[in-house]
Image (cartoon, rainbow, N blue to C red; front, side, top):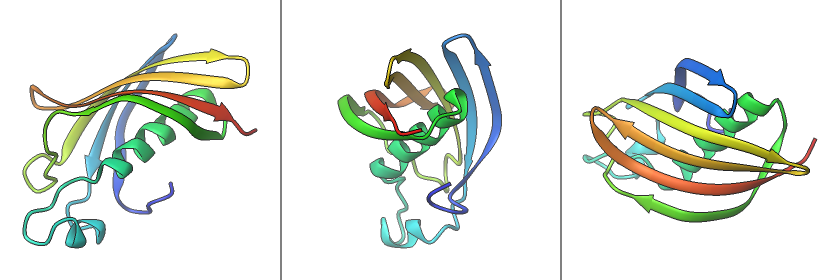
Length: 122
């Protein structure tokens, strides 16, 4: 985990190409003290890192983000109000690349849609 203590994975289910994970955010983490004081917001780059780490867990490979397209932040994730998020990833491996389509939600709210291509490092 690159950002130690930011989140914990509460559940992780993989069935063929589909990964479903529930992640609990640590609202007390220091990243939220600066982003933003008094009104914490989950940084987009941290969400992309979580998606990368879940994809690495699903594939058993070390990955490098090479392309992020169709990145749409649809709702603010405030860890004090919504500390549990659900991620659904469709993971497709093609040679030395891994393609991911992700949706991230909390409650019934769509928070993030992302398509990404990762290069396999190991």
